[in-house]
Structure formats: C-alpha cells, structure tokens
Length: 392
Image 1 (cartoon, one colour):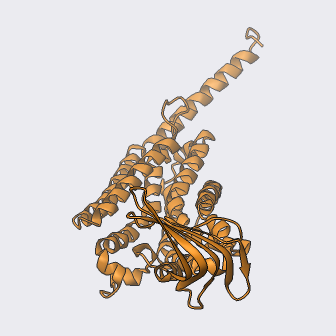
Image 2 (spheres, helix red, strand yellow):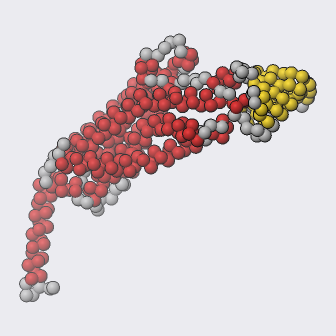
Image 3 (cartoon, rainbow, N blue to C red):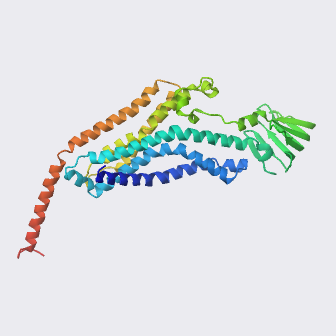
C-alpha cells in the first residue's frame, strides 16, 4: 500500500472509531438498562449482570458498524476537501483509485468482521444469555423472593413472604393469581415450602379466596394445599431458542424435528437471508460515501453536508432491507427483492463512481491552467506595488 493510501486508511479508520465507540456505548447502555430487572427481581450479583451486559454487545455491533463507517468516510473526505487535499490530488494528475482503493479495502475488512460477528459470535452469545436468564429465574420462589416484598413472578401472578427459613421453608405466604380470566384467586398461608423438584408450592394452615367476575367471593380454609409450579418452573428453567439464536449451519440445514422451526419456519428463512445480506452493508455504504464525498468540490458550492446525504441514503437502504426481510417470513418471493435491493444499490453506486471519474479526467489540466493564471496575476500585482507610481 502506498504512503498516501496508508494515510487515508489511518485517517478514515480513526474517524470510524471516533463515531463507532460513542454510538455503540449509548445503544449498549439502553439495551443493558432494559435488563436491569435481572438484578432487582432475581437477586443476581453485579458480576452476573456484567456478564449479561457483555453477552448483549455482539448483537449491537453489526448494526452500528455500517453507519459508523459512513460517518468516518464522509467526515474524513470532507475535511480533506476543506484542506484542499483532494484538489491537490486531482491537480497532480493522480488516479482517483488512490482514494477509492484504501477506503474500499477498509470497508471489505469491516464487512468480513461483521459477517463473523453476526454468524459466529452473536448466536453463541444469545444462547448463553438466554440460558443465564433461565437459570436465574428457575428457582425464583424458594431462593430469590425477598422477605416482605411483593414480586411479580409472571403476568397475573404475585407472591409475598414474611420470612424465609432454612430447608426451603417460607413463613407468612401471600399469593395472588389472576391468570385465569374466569376468576381471581388469593391464597394466605402461615407456612409453606417449595418441594425439592421445584414443581409445587406446599402451603399449610391457610385459606383461599375465589372471586368471580360478577363479584361473588367464596372462602375455603385448608390445612394443606399444593400450588402447581410445574409450568412456571419449566418455562423459567429452560431457554427456548429462536431463529436469531441459531448458527448459520442450522439456518442452512434446519432440523425438521425442532419444535420452534416446525412452528415458525418462515422466521428461519427470513433470518437466513437477512444474515446473508446484512454483512455486505459496510461495503455498499462505503460506495455511497465515495460517490457523495469522493470528489474535490468548491467551498462556494451550496449543498448539504455529504454526511447528511450519505446517512440519509444509508438509512433508506437499511429500512428497505429490514422491510423486505420481514416480508420473507410470510412471502418467500421477497427473497429476490432483498437481494435485488442490495445488488442494485451497489451497481448504481459503482456506475456513478465511474461516471464521476470520467467527468473529472480533465480537472488536472484545468487546475494547472488556473494556478498558472493566478500566479501570473500575483506577479503582476507585486510588480505594480514595487513600481515608483504603485501604491504601498
């Protein structure tokens, strides 16, 4: 790589990192805060929360990378144009590939990295995160529920205990169950315990209030009552894997006996083609940025900042890809639309880049003539100022 190409890669790469890290940190923080209930509701340590936060990061990186690259390219080329560096390059008769080649090389490297993260790292991180959350909630009643605090176990089910003793014994039990729309149930018990398998809550010396929608309430006292937790513990103790959690190998050759795949095969088809197209976005966005900001422009030319134009096109293409990928779930014909959008965008950018290159072939000669004329004017003005009759 030539010295000037190395300079461009270093400058664009630095600006790319400057744009990537703050945006990545902001999005990552918002995603992590949405899962803060893992600590507040399940009593996990800050170390477990930090581990979960780390596992979230790979799912954000492929989304942010293309847009950070757009910012890095357009901002760097705009600064070079403002410093007249692009004008000097064209005036010296240098081939425009000296700008295009290093930027596209950087974009291809970022695309390959995005493919690796999206297909190798992210699925494993998502599976680990799901298993971690499932394990944290698996034994929620006997080990996690805090004393004298109401806790929502799931929608419509709330539990409170007065005291927790050794041997999984609970004192002062209160359970409110409104999951069945036909009636509401409220349980009171002086003592209770979760059985070793975690499938049932055994309550002793208490009563249950049953309220129907018409307002009628019936009260039943009991010496011993078993509250079924099997569905709850099974759902919380096992991580259900979705299409986004699967590796590329599974998506290419899914297991027909997999329950989730059998129930929703369209989501797996959509996820596969999304992954096979999203990784190329950094390279396509780089072509957009070069078309918009890769030429020397006059400072007097009125136009939007190249970054605004490039980001607008990038967001439009990303939205079109997102829409087409979602439609694939119910309409397989949108597979061709998804690939067609990206191929057409890349071809249009390449054509515009080549046309811009041909239209600028005469710029070096024009710039030389302009510089020569300005030099002559400067010499004439200097001679006039030095003459006896000239002004100081």
